[in-house]
Length: 134
Ligand SMILES: [Zn+2]
Image (cartoon, rainbow, N blue to C red):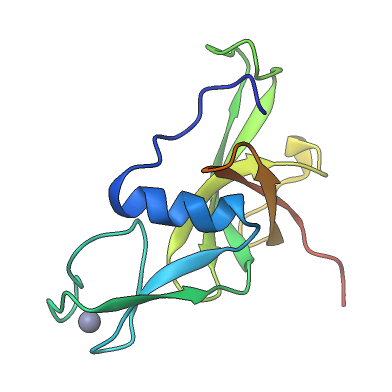
């Protein structure tokens, strides 16, 4: 169990974090038009449908943006730490921490992969690390 603040696992966000707690990255996918949705919501932004399923995502993506925090507000975080915005292969963007790379080596579009940390029975946390060269 992590000492850090955890997301509140309620509503649709609770479903998202419950999948992460089981080690699965799943995103909503519109049952009418097939578009991916994140963050979770009740209606499709493209077609308005309320029908959706939770589909597995590849976990691969590219760095869209990042910030390096040098002064932590929570003692569970050891500064400096890096928060990434990653555009997934499926299209939606996710936010998570960086591991496995010095932030000075970050570049836009760097290929990364998701790692999931089990934080509690109801919450998993997202991390990203550089993808292995193929
Ligand atoms: Zn739709």
